[in-house]
Length: 491
Image (cartoon, rainbow, N blue to C red; front, side, top):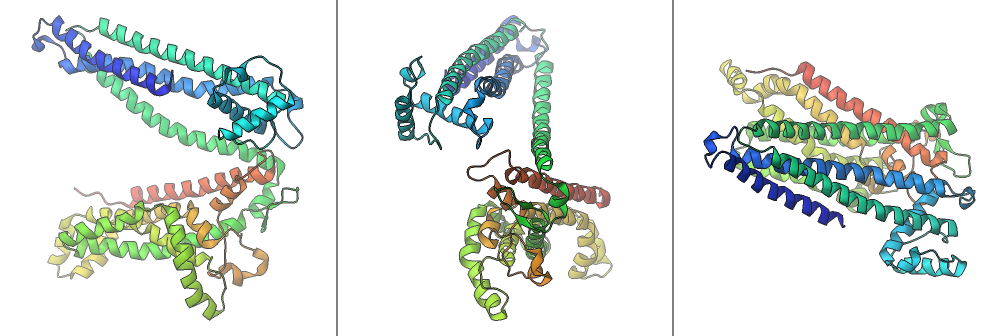
């Protein structure tokens, strides 16, 4: 049964349960809703939630566990002879999954039957899969075909069992909740506990997702450091991946580019964003504010690829022609300054909106007190409003810095993909018209294309990701600490 139909049946069953549960409760009270312990709608919601909760819970759990179980079972069936010296079991399993999806797309029972598997048949199958939009990087081996056939069969059986189990869970919840419905049943308490459980699960998912991200990077980073020296990674000064085994994989050149571009971005975003926030909160009329604030926040909704194109086509050539070439500092439109300026423009609404909200939170009584002592409006802003809002403003700046450090597309199109070269001297390292790249760009490049997940050149992406996660986490923690430590509490 298609997943969408399964979900639709559960929702329809929940709607029917709501109506029937409400009607049963009212009937048990002799038609007098005042006799009921709870409002009639609570009885309906109790039945509906008891249908939805176990059914959807089982559905999500099944969708998470089934692929892992099938993957493990089929992978164990693959003989070692099916894995060449230039491949891995994981790469072969990716071919198995694609062929399995292709068999389902072709919907040809003959392909899943027990028949002779020869070279002509496999060649014809690859052509048919290609015509169906399933791209394969190599020929289909008999072992891969047999594994794909098994993968498809197990997936089909799993989907059937999942549909049956989920529907039984929904019907069971419907039956139990409907039978216990009567005028004395504490439906309101049960529903509120159910909603509380759902909220706790939602919060737990957010926390567990973070934990899962950390551990997924941690395990792969451990494999990287088992194959590559951690001293070279953290203290080396050269980034030169070489899949022939002579790689120099140091984070410092990438980290320098990341921090340099982020620093320029903050030089652009912080003054402009902060001054815009002060103007909107202290000087602008309500009419001007109603137009200017949404106009500034539009910048936050522009895709970063558009900013990257703006850097590539407009900002980069302009900086090159009017500054780099006349000053003799560079000849390329791809530079640290290009990426930094455009990224700073992107960050303006982050700084502006957060700072505006924080400045508006300063009580008007503090302003009135300053005016009463004879201070002008500008003096009040400098000596009262901004100091009172400073912890929140610093937190907003650090959050913007975290956003800048994680940016990718603007850097790719605006600053290039070349890592900083420490052996060329300090002058080129600090030259804002030099092309540099960041940690995030290299994470993408190391995981793009045909990659071998057993090589240090690919696994280094996880070490880079873990390092970047640690840096941004530290900035976020610092921002929260500053806000909580120094914020003013107003009545």
